[in-house]
Image 1 (cartoon, rainbow, N blue to C red):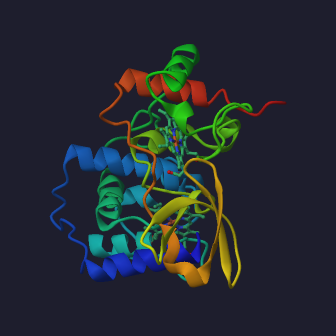
Image 2 (cartoon, rainbow, N blue to C red):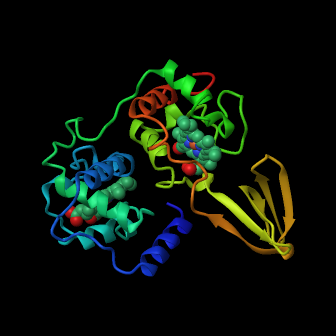
Length: 261
Ligand code: HEC
Ligand code: HEC
């Protein structure tokens, strides 16, 4: 986890005060479902789908060595546990609370049995049609040498990302913008704003690939502000596509395993 995300996370939670977490466990099914998705994407790699993969830690049991209240759990999720491999997560208070909602209900919904929240992969051929057509994905993404370079190349995304991560990328692109994918923005002294991918910077200058793929080189002395921004430019497809279409898209993405598999 990058230092930058950690700092942002602390700043965000300080600004919004203590997280508003229902202590009476009054979670909605949507909270739990969302939390489950985040858990699969961010936690199950270490803790396992059933929450029991780390010796001495049983996330589904409802008893924690290091936490009693939900607020404690939110803090652990956001800040990690110092001097252990439990990392900080740049989750908003709400996302962290949803993960807690999921943890509190893991055993009840039979997590780890594979039925809880995992959504599958649909038809790759239909997915490809959506990718290149209605989904508009090729306006930003490059696959097998075709397409622009403003967003990450997806040619190997099926080899490097899990199913839940792919679903999450489509439903909630802001949830986890990867450090290498963070967008950089500058505001020049003349008032124009340029957003793109940071290629390089030194003490005096920055080089950005802007949205129309122009290489822009700027002197820092000409800039009013510059820095990484958090939000993804990728829209959420939650409302734009049906569940079936999303599954099909993921079905296509998992086939992308590099040109020379
Ligand atoms: C890189 C591996 C890793 C990831 C990813 C990870 N954890 Fe952990 N987590 C650990 C380890 C290791 C510990 C045990 C630390 C210790 O107490 O020694 C731990 C401890 C915890 C604890 C404290 C357990 C207790 O009994 O007090 C909670 C709660 C927890 N993790 C939740 C999560 C959640 C929720 C996520 C996802 C948002 C997550 N972890 C992601 C490695 C990880
Ligand atoms: C407006 C530009 C834009 C569009 C349109 C767009 N994306 Fe993205 N996408 C991005 C950017 C930028 C990132 C990297 C930053 C981030 O993680 O959000 C990204 C990230 C991703 C990732 C995660 C990549 C990784 O390495 O984990 C996947 C998967 C993805 N997009 C798939 C799609 C699919 C499928 C579509 C079409 C339904 C789509 N994108 C449409 C800009 C876009």
